Image 1: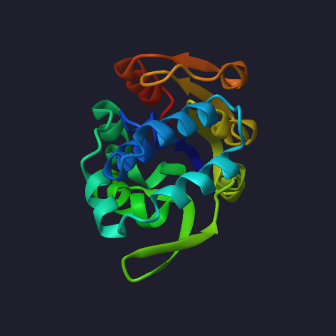
Image 2: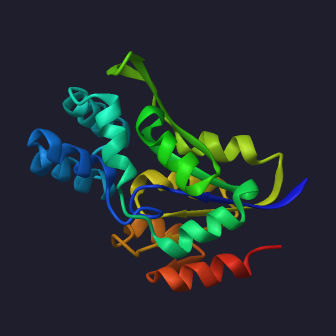
Length: 203
């Protein structure tokens, strides 16, 4: 059995920007998508409901165009370096779509990931095949690792914090939601401080 796994939320944790609002600027729906994203982060509407609606609104953009937009998203540099240096035991756990963020994770971070899955034809998004329940990602790693560290900021991260062993609420981009902070062993607001903490948790 391996010692420690590190499971990171993607948007607003590893990235310095929320990805869906960034994509929405392409079709003039930034205000609407941003509002949906903010109320979802706060837990005012369920992630699955919000995500279905946001994907429906954004599905008119080609997958290739979305990948190009996502490839330019800013990453938290210290966190990126930690993941790259420990890629065998780092995982991205994101509700975002595989066809949109898979290349970013593979090319920039080099680690494995759990994500929602899309149904598509050619370059067009057709529907959602599967929306990730973050709890299931942690469950699938439970038999492989002695300790699972979870890092996130939103209501959607609560389920993975429930099953993890050490929870870190990270407020480098957003204020973490109160319910997540209450479940956390650490609350960190600085990228460098998070990097130090993560390195201290290495076996």
